Amino acid sequence: MTSSFAPYLHTPSAVLFDGIVPVPLWAVTQMSIDASYSVPAVGGSNRRVALPTHDDTIGLSAVLIGPLRLEWKTALENIAEASRFGTVLSPKTGGLGTGLVLVSSATVRTNLAVQSLSFSLSAARRDTIDVTLRLIHLPPPGSLTRLLDTTSIAVGALTDALPF
Image (cartoon, rainbow, N blue to C red):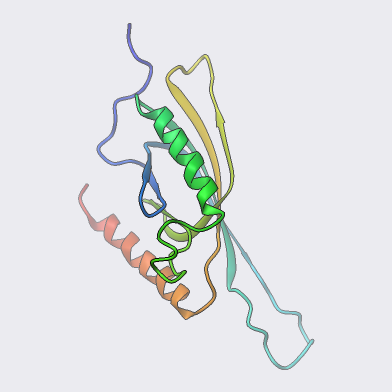
């Protein structure tokens, strides 16, 4: 009898990390990054109001494969629940690293919370679990947030340059 899941790759498509438990997503089949920008009202006042620069959401579709797929499903459920209250590193970082970290070839994002998480199973694809995940970017206020965003861009550029 043969197994229906693919062999593991050397590098996962994406990793969702809460500060302690990294959850590899080996087969990301779709990812979308949406940004909505706030624009102040025109002509309301000659003083500008400090607004957040943008609100980001990330949508992922992935497949959990292999013999550890049920453990990864449980880990995803646990970090999704924990992301609502901050991660275990939040008290140690003074509230700076309050959310999840997503590392992928398309983006490196910090301070994420799970907005929705769903799993589906199919008889046609045995030994796999399909995951649909929606993450929202919730940065703490302050200039350090912009520095973290800039640093994540630099880390993403470095990962593109590495030969693995």
